[in-house]
Length: 180
Image 1 (tube, rainbow, N blue to C red):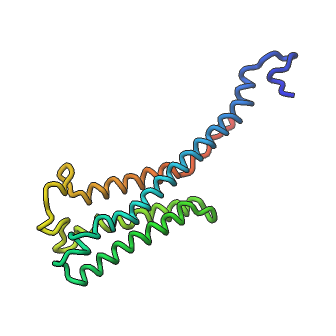
Image 2: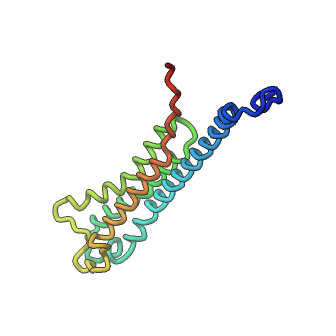
Image 3: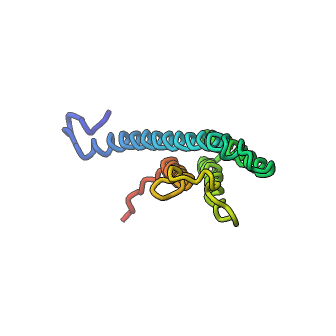
């Protein structure tokens, strides 16, 4: 019998709050953590799908793959980059939804694979002679707030990956009061 509401003792609000409240608040915390984790996994999954599809949308046209001015070897490397985006996305999805193994390791792998394509794209401009656009395609419409559209996409996607990592991370263990 729950003595917090016993007729002999009357209603003890402090006892009732700690007895029933801690169980309830623990369940609420667990539900909130599960909701955060699901939101983070969903966000990483959306990033993965975007990573798999966006290179084909951006490059399968006259600016890249169908550009008659591009030599065959340049098209080879473009195909390599597009395929790498798809493969990284698939591996990311594998680790995002993997049930076996350590959850922290799965999260780190998923975040790492999700970010590799975008970090390598961001670094590509650092190579000698690299440009965001070929001269004939470099127009004002390819910039957002003065930044090349690729840089804006990289910032947004890497921010989404960071947000997903925060959402998926395990909640800190509740602190126990120190004995004293």
